[in-house]
Image (cartoon, rainbow, N blue to C red; front, side, top):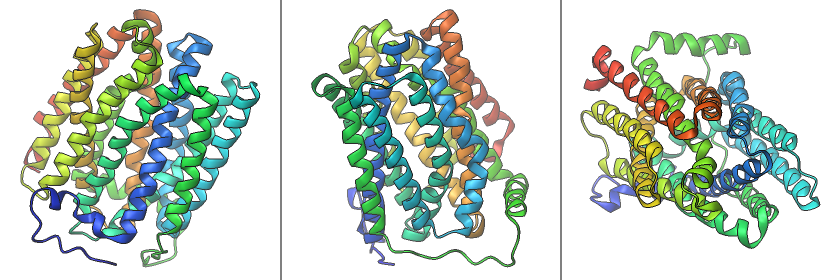
Length: 411
């Protein structure tokens, strides 16, 4: 592995030190291209569904279709990740994602797309991502080593957050210029690039396992490992409450764009980009900090800012105030989850890494439950009040964790 001479780096040089590693660069490019496609899909598919159905609940059900497989199958994906060459698993899953996107593109071009097609595509994508994402997280330490791990994770987050600035705004413009079918054509091209970039990363091998065990035994071992590692368990709980109560607002952004702020698809892209700008600042800020004391206290503080920001955004009626608040929400949430992931990665063994990251990613699947609850509430009491309630629950949950689990404050 190519090792960067990062020890003497200062300032912005330290911020980007892990990108000196060739294999990590190609991996990072693949992440960028994949998340460009995903962020464009968030705008194009969200707008299409809301125009087709005029229902916030329909947006929530798409999230359920994606999230439930990630939640239920994710631990199995972690077991397969620990047993398989991670680069090859990423390639296989990305090819399948490309084919799903191509199928939806063909339906859009033919004018025969229906809601159930989008629901089915989201369901299949959720199943595939249950195997893709654990491998993507678990391969990073193999590419960069322990000393560059936090920087690499932060830059990985920074790359995805950069796409949250550019891709939604571009998608909002492209919807008007070339239509939603054209946006999906661009997305398909992005996924093809992902496959090519990952193929540039050489195979690394599988961490040695002390004995042959069954898939079920490996699966149980992952849950037992987390139950016995209280610190890792509490870090996963922090991620869980942030995702369950804080993130569902994103699936309702078309509602805020069209019905609350009256800004159309272009405005939807602006709102998503503002969130991405903040997220980029937050993740780059963590990357520049390196290893520092009281990371747990900073993580909890960012979680509180995240929750308060969501509440204030939900009750805002001004576009410019909403853009500013989404910047703050993006900054806080990106800093929170970057720190959370890095701390978990730093406290697990290579043999267990895939399973632990898969169980962490189960919490991302559980986001769909939060989306279902808040989108259902939005049907009954309106999106602003429903989203504000989610943000308030996040603040309450983080305060309780900070008080009841002092190890998190002292981490």
